[in-house]
Each structure stands twice: as structure tokens, then as C-alpha cells.
Image 1: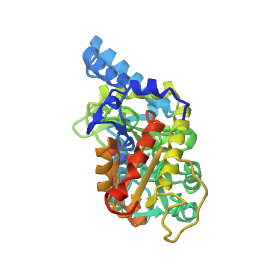
Image 2: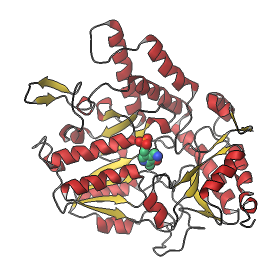
Image 3: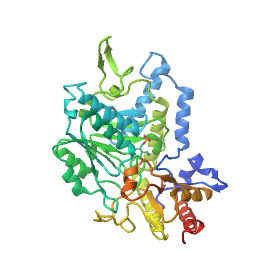
Image 4: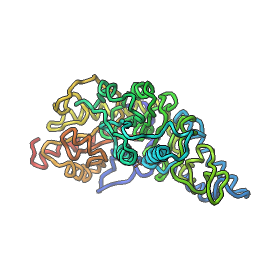
Length: 435
Ligand code: PMP
């Protein structure tokens, strides 16, 4: 994987030089949260040191400067996903963005914002379709919305190799379907879902599409308008940016018709004691004081990613994924989730070739609990994630309660992968579970 100048990239990430348990850190937990380059840390500190002020308010010089930096950040981050600035709503993260959408549809369903938003209203018996692979953040808000409106939640299953059952999707998405919400890349399987195909199925029945782009935005070139989705969310902290900031992209017609979720200051034009007129999007969805320094630092993060080039990032991580996958398959007793070669043989077994992936593998080690694997690797300086990764239904589908997940980012090297594989190859004999 010699596409990137990794020595230079790694030098930009101060934390990667740290030691953990006396060992050089091998950070393979970027699926949970990424490390941040110095440029991102500097952008946040610099704003707070030199320009901090309330945006969109006050006539003083600092306020104007802060507003300009904040709106420039919107332009930059929107551009990163192929969108125009008015199509990007700041949120505190993907979870907040998905809840915003679900609650806005709920508001349309109880009559607020009608008639413009009437098209979004859910009635008893209407259907919301998700997939079996969703992170809880793109599942529970829909469960709650279904419970509030009387809508029915359905799910698209996955094959044993982790790919979505698109035949089932075609049968499930019907005239009753009002919303199709799905992840671009599963945070457990690392597989890139067929977005265009699912969007076409949803469009054909007039359903709204909601994409969870958390695990694709840091790793792939992303053009949300070209994908054709109505709405999409991502999280700053997973894409080299700070905590507490994320984005909700929406097609203009959709954002313009959707009623707000949170209400209050900064999202209105005229307010009387009885009622309020709302600003157009994106401000309509940005009630209250916004995460300004975080937005500016997220813009620095996407400039960093763009500086390297997302095609190069994707190619690099594909090579890491292939190296990791081959290494994991060669260690006895390891079962990869979402893999034709080692996947569980539990019905619904049609394999669909090799899907596109990001650098992420979750796996089970025969005879050793995921938490023990995690601690064993940690003692050797290797940071991975263990547990259900906020995807309990998907783990249940594969007969597991927990797995180990190794996930890469722009800054990982072949040496990181090899250190991880080398350490892992000793885990079963260490715990007396065979070699
Ligand atoms: N969706 C997916 C696919 C994720 O991986 C995550 C983060 N684990 C989320 C949603 C939620 O993101 P956040 O916690 O940043 O809101």
C-alpha cells in the first residue's frame, strides 16, 4: 500500500506517536473514533484564541469574523460530500442527525408544518424499511417513530456473506413503504451497500431515503447528490474531526418541506407569543447556539482528507483491508463476519461475489471471549474494539453476542496490520483454545 506518504501522514497525528502499555500504539479502532491531525487541533484552538464570538448575532467585528469562518466551514464540509452549503445542517453527530429526521417526520405526522410537510406524514400501516445491519442509531429512532405513528418497521436481511439480500429488498419495498433508512457501510461488516440500487427501489414507490454515511465519509469519495439519497448523516469525530459535530445533508426540496425538530433561538424570522415563522434550511434545523469551533475544525479535517485525496485514501485502505482479511483467514479458529469463505452456514446462504469494502473486519475467535482477545491485544499495544458495536441484531443474526473489530483509517500502515495479525495468531494458544 504505497499510494500515500504514510511517514508524513503519521507525523501529522501526534497521538500515533504515543506508547500504550510500554508498546508503540497500533491504533485499529478508527471505526469507533478516528485520531485527529495537528491541523484540526490547531483550527479549533486558533478559532477559540483569536476569533471566538457568537455567530449570526451582533454587529461587532469578531462576530462578523466568526460568522464568516462558520459559514465557510459549512461550504467546505458540504463540498466534501458534493453538496451546496444550504443543504448541510450541523448536528452534534450522526445519532443526532438520524433522530432529527425521525422526529421531524413524526412532527409532520401529527400535523405540524402541514400542508407542505404532509407528504412526509406517516399513518398507521405505513411502512419504514431498514436493514438487519444497522447501527442502533439508525434503528431505534425508527422503532420509536413507528411506535408513535402506528407505522410498521420492516428489515432487509443479509446473506451469510454479509451482503444485503437485494431480492428481499425488492419484495419488501412496496407502495406502503414511506421511508427506507440504511447504512452506506456497515460498522461491523465493512461492506459498501448498493446505495443506488436501494434508492431506485425507494424512488419507484415514492419513499424517502435516509443514508447513514458514518462509516463511508472517512474512507471513500462521497457524492451524496449523485447517490440520489434524500437525506444523509455523518459524524465529525470518525472523519478526523472533533467530537460534538456532524452533518445532515438533505436534498433541497426535502429540507424545505420537512418541519423542524428542535425549536428556539436562531431558527426563526418572526415570533409572537402565539406562534413563530421559521427560517429556511439549514437554519430551520439549527435551533440554539451551534458547535462553532467544532464546525471550523471539521472543515480543517475534510481539507486534510481532500489534501491527500479520497481516491488515494480509499485505495490505501482497500489494500490494508485485503492484507488484514487474508491474514485473518489464515489464522485457525477465526471466523470473519460478512465473509463468504468463513461466514456462518445458517440458511439464506447465497453468496454474491466480493463486495466493495472499507478497511474494517469484525471476527470471532473460537474458544476465546471477544473481551479477552481485546485485552490480550491491548497488552501488546494493539487497540481494537470488542462487543456488539451497537449492532446487536446483526450479531444475533450471526449467532454471536460480541465480536472483535479491527478498523483502519488514512494513517494505518502494513506494519500496523502485521503487528496486529502477529499478536492475534498467539491468542488461542495463550487461552488454551488450540493454536
Ligand atoms: N452509524 C454508524 C454506522 C456508526 O458506526 C456510528 C458510530 N459508531 C453511528 C451511526 C453513531 O455515530 P455517533 O455516535 O457519532 O452519533
